[in-house]
Length: 265
Image (cartoon, rainbow, N blue to C red; front, side):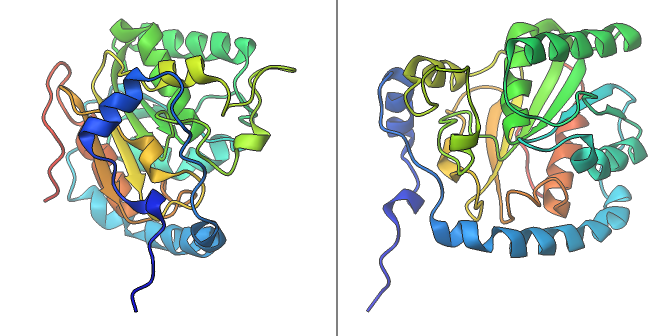
């Protein structure tokens, strides 16, 4: 006998993805299966151990041109979680910066203003557009910054970010939109807005082994200057995984204004 697969693990056809984007009240995907959630910590430790391979990666990936990169952390994380990634990018000659806003406790109006000020400061300081790398909820922030300031953003790279359905995570009950407001699952208009394509090049990195965020909630619609790149890693270890670092380095090295899909070497 063959074990039955969870129907949520089946890929969504592109036609269905587009239909979902046009429908404001489509059913939520729900979080990943509990089996993946239970394995998340063990897989994250394995991915963290693999981070030692970054030294070998530095000689294999293209070096940067010195432009600024703003790295945004996931929910309940801060700059400490993205320090290894930023160190890797600085070794490649990028000016990689943290968000300097403490622990990410969820979206607020004040946070939006602070993020915009941080982006504009980096752009004005360098006289260049800024690349944004966002992990999980940080990727949602990165996409919305790019939507609001497309002239200041060079490219957006997201790591396990559920912009297609922000409610499809095990952290849904912990993230609030506003006191007394609708849950993420019931906020249909907001969810429909977040999954709309952004006006700058974007790469979404996702994993079917993600135990925190449902991988299908991380998928971009087909279109110019946007893509999905699949890896095999955990959610909490994604920012340390050598293959994720390879993808990020390749995307950031694209000349400003140009685009080509990622092709693994």
